[in-house]
Amino acid sequence: MKLAILSRSPKCYSTLRLQEAAQNRGHEVRVLDTIKFAIDLQRGAPDLYYRQKQIEDFDAVLPRIGASITYYGTAVVRQLQEMDVFCANTAHGINNSRDKLRSLQLLSRHHIGIPRTTFVHNKKDVLPAIERVGGAPVVIKLNEGTQGIGVLLAETVKQAEAIIELLQSQKQNVLIQKFVAESKGRDIRAFVVGDRVVAAMRRVAQGQEFRSNVHRGGIAEPVDLPQEYIETAVRATQIMGLQVAGVDMLEGRSGPQIMEVNSSPGLEGIETCTGLDVAGAVIEYIAAQVDFPEIDVRQRLTVSKGYGVTEIYVPEGSKFVGRTIAEIRAEEHDINVLTLYRGRKVIPNPRRDRVLEANDKLLCFGKLEVMRGMIPAKTRRRRQPDITSLPVDAVTAADVESVE
Image (cartoon, rainbow, N blue to C red; front, side, top):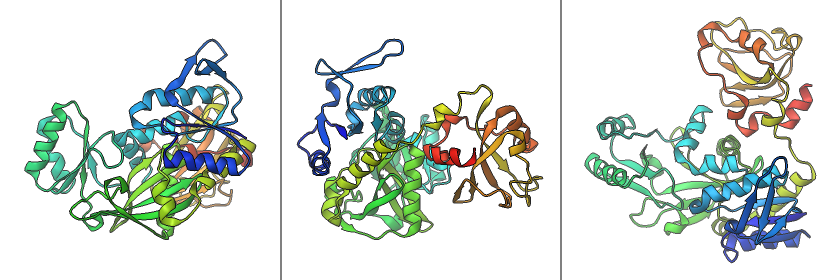
């Protein structure tokens, strides 16, 4: 495999470890400065140049895109995707994770635990918003920030008002978030590669600091995650559209609560803490994907006019409740049931004899007009997501092949 690592810091620990892990496994690897690329566009022939030389022979790319160059970095990644180079994280996934509000909106929609959060613009809405998240103390976050930068704790409502007013006067977008008191000064970092957590650590803040980031002086310790935390971390990564991510979670009374999904997680803290070869796990995953890539069904399934993917909700009292998937006669109408969502459970390729329950959601592929007629009248006004808005894990190539 010929691998490119996009990084502006070739001498930093993470870049060096990834390069070393690739070389130790017999792969050819180059570290390329993200802003040294030039993007050329013409009909049917996307090109990319690095230091005036054409790029065309990489099998895979591992983006390590810093927050300060997100726009240009994701443009480069997008161009590589158009050139059919496997990208460990896509431009879409990186953009989702960089926008804290957008990422929380996606997680909330898919019933992932998050701290109560509000986003306001008008000064008059600040006090009611603070009350809605549970009152002071509250955490105030810049919508874009990394390594704990732009994260502030306001102990009182007056402090919160002053901080928000100052930040908004500087044209900064801020989030107001419930302070999870039981998790003060500590959080969990789960390192996700593909569909598994390859390493996890608990970060503990020192002294009066409430931010537990290692860059803020926090101390890390290895941790064995409960299954609920593993499932939440993997699901959050997939919802973002990422394949390699660091998922930061608070340990709330009701279970894991996602703070952030990082598309360029550092390796030094977690490898030093756990003694695990995290870089090796990343490289092995990329090599496996190059050998047997998944299909981006969000693009492939919309080729046939009138066909697409949507969710069909089964509310209380629906005629589908108590009936099996076979009995709703979906296949007779050229509709394939790809995934069944039941509470927190995700059941891919559900059996035809599975009985449907109230509040189930069926992810289906088929003729849109027919599926529209299956939506109960009371829920028909709910926007049905089109295929471009679905999380990457909603449909996989394996799902599609097994139901055709």
